[in-house]
Length: 199
Image (cartoon, rainbow, N blue to C red; front, side):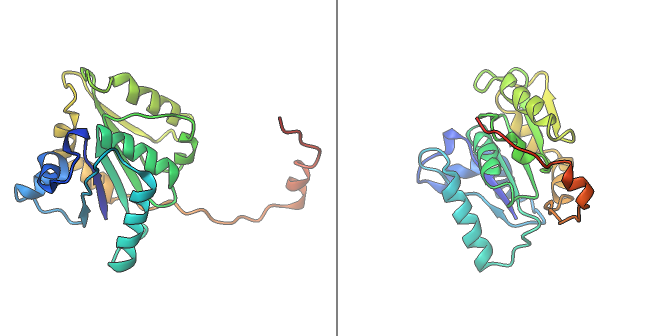
């Protein structure tokens, strides 16, 4: 299952507008993908909790592999991708934010999340530095994060990104990270004994 979040120019109530960029446009042009594609439409920005509820409702009523749910988006949808993944990292197997940004406070939650970020270096709408800061910060927790920059591309970096077959091959090869319990010896636990002070 792949969820695609569009940019600000496609907001509204006319679903045809969602088809102007990204995977929905490619599907409209006849491309076939080996996954279910959900392309919701926002009326005014992306609401992370609404999106989470939508995905869970769809998964409950359809045959969805819960270990292989992927999230991607461009511009405003890139912001939405970062935000939703940080709020619900337990849901996604991998994310692909394109020319988006957002805060860095909760990036540590993506320490085990496969991430591939794209941005055009000549972007004058969302500065290239916005993604660079996100990626640099995330790499302190998650060294495997991928970042593709296009030196001569402006704000439409999604055109090259979504037309790259490698993106989909990489995306579909990811499975959700699962934590497992691990037995810790009493000697090891004793190293953490003591008093702790919180400010």
